Length: 66
Image (cartoon, rainbow, N blue to C red; front, side, top):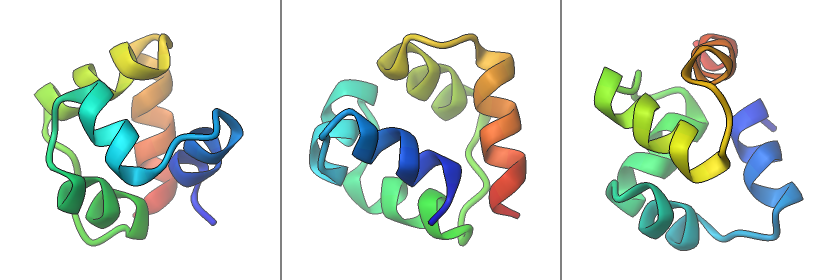
């Protein structure tokens, strides 16, 4: 399990819920979690906003996936 998936599950969110909160595609959430997609800067910003963490934290989380 990636750190992003762990963070999502800790909050009880589905991939669809995270996608809605971050305003990104659900398929992209799945690809980011599986390491098949490196998120763009704007996706990292949106994920950080959804999780209410600094963008620097999302960079660390994303780096763990690939």
